[in-house]
Length: 277
Length: 277
Image (cartoon, rainbow over all chains, first blue to last red):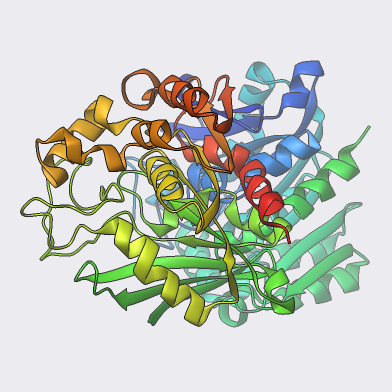
């Protein structure tokens, strides 16, 4: 783990690190905010997964994150959204390749060698967090935005005992049914749609609800709402499976970090409350 | 005034606008955050002046500003830091020319035609705010960061009845005595140092204190502290003149927006409290 930079914020510490990932075969960069409460003992850990094109910095700079994490006493980890580098496959479009990992294990060439973001986040990075930060790994939650909301929902549903709490800002809830997901899943997973279901939050939800109370905020002035996000599909799947869900439709809000920052404190409070000992 | 973009945040509205400025002879862009309290009547106005290289977006994206302005019920205006454009004089360095207006009226070629940021901010932009936003212009405060902290201090001291309250994050308090100021003042005002004093917060303070209680936060891990900022010079000038000053030396904090965002709520509360009717 190589230190990149470190900042004091809200009486806590934001640090950025590089490390060589065996899972992606690349150097990976991530950021961790440690709140002041960690001086007194281990604190819960929240995983924040970012959306298309983003890296650690979007939420750490624009998300109102440190204020909320310091208020509620949680560590927040912000991984990158894909492997990156000159030797890593890419696509000219913003929604495929570097910056668009979709939190899955790619099976198709040329992506399959590096694009393993689900295993990176669920297996490799947690060990690094455990070894280097005052993290209580028995109290983890996961949340994210857009493509990262998709990541948070599927990783929670696939690993409910690891990520005990879950929330999302304007998530892609049904990638199998929208253009962003069609394109990415076809490239990363191939044409056979039976391989898509394990990365589709609506499909996973229809199989099995979780014990958590999921919180979703969705801006009603979000340009991607109707074509890409379709929260009503997840709402229906949750109703079918008996999942406890609060879906808040926020009038006037768009897809930006102005929206995320507005509701960041609510989300972190939601996780911290449920993870309280 | 031409609308550029508009965002809902913290139940208020952030809007960005272009307009043709007679003072700078260019198109100028600024942002305004209007808090939800403005639905019930006119609210106080704070002017946030940014530092070198910045424009409206730095503080609006990274400053934790909307949260604090919505909590305390104030409008915040974020002007640009200089005129900009292909026809506007510039310098390759980040600390002269476009992005580095230093909140003064330039008297030297080639700068004197466009670089009149003090008159832009004190004369032209207030009329636009008065005409277009629910602003109580009898209750204005001014604050800023670094070069913008310099701007806030000098404009408060020169116009104490207009800007009744003042605060700053890591301000340049004595431009006549530090490299950033030497370079800019020589270029914009010429070699004759007698013309520099009216734009030097320490010099102005030694002439006349204000009725306000000035708040300054300064990070002690700020790389510019010793060479460019020198808050002890302003502290001494305030003591000499009987100015009420709270200078907080914040251990571990640097010059970044992580520092600013940490103390933004304190600053906006400081202004809002003093501007309360």
